[in-house]
Length: 320
Ligand code: GUN
Image (tube, rainbow, N blue to C red; front, top):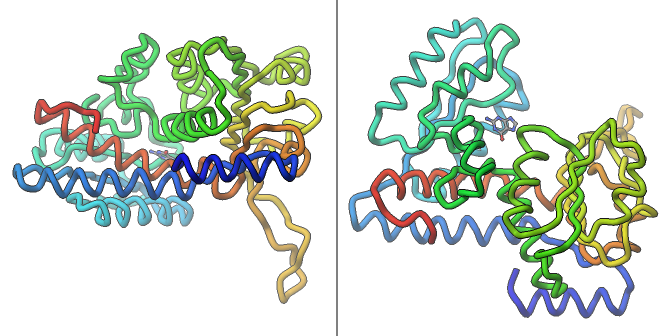
C-alpha cells in the first residue's frame, strides 16, 4: 500500500470511525508487478522461472484455481505448464510425474493441487516434491525452516505469506509496532494457523494460537492487538470481541446463502470471512474484507515463491 493511500485511508477512518480496509487486490497487483519486472530483468541473464501445476481429476473448483495459477504465471513472464492426470491415476503415476518435474531444469516450482482424490495420500505426494521446488511451502523441510525462523531460505506457504504482507501494510498505516504486540491466531492448521503463528513470532509478537478447545475464545481474542482468523467458520469471530483499534486479518473464505435470489427463486450465494465483518469494522483499526482481502494475495505469493525458487536455484539473492 502506498504511504499516501494509507495516510488517506487512515484520515477517512478518523472521520468515519470505521476500520481501515486493507485492499488485498491492490497489494496483490503490486506483488505481481514486482515479480513481472524482476522476471523481465532476469531474462537478460537467460533465466526464466518455470511453474508446473498438477491437477488430478476433474473437480470444477480445482480446475478454476489451476487455470488462474497458469494464467498468472504466464502474465508474470514465466514458463508455465499444467499436467492433468485422470481421477483414476495411481499414486505411482503421480509420484513418477513429480520425480520427472523434480529433475526438469526448466521447472523451478511444482504445485500439486489439493485436495487429491481420497485414494491418494497428500503427505506422500508433498514429501516427494523437492523442497527447493515446493512453492506451496508444504514440505516438512520448509515447515521446519519456518519453525526455526529461517524465512530467508524457506519457501513460505502462500496464504500465510500474503497475510503477513497485508498485516505489515496495516501496521505501517496505523503506526502499530508488531514487536511486543499481542497476536491471537484462531485456527491451528498446518496450512495457515501454525505457519502464521511462526511468522508473527518472527516479528517479535507475543503469539497465542487459539482453537476449538480454547476455553474462553472471546476473552482470548479481546486481548489481541492483531487477530488472525483462520477457522473456516462464517462470522464466528464476533465484532464485540475485537479490541478497539486492533488489526484483523480474516483468512476465512466461506460460501453462504445470500439475501437476494436468482431468477429461479433460489438464494444467491456470497463469500464471507470468519469474522462478523459488519460488527468488526466499528471496532477494528484495520481489517481485510472478504472477498478482496487475503484471497487475491495467495496467487501473487505463489508467483513470488516461484521466482524466489528460481533465484535460489541459480545461487542468486532470493529477496528482490
Ligand atoms: N487447494 C486450495 N488451495 C490450495 C493451495 O494453496 N495449494 C494447493 N496445492 N492446493 C490448494
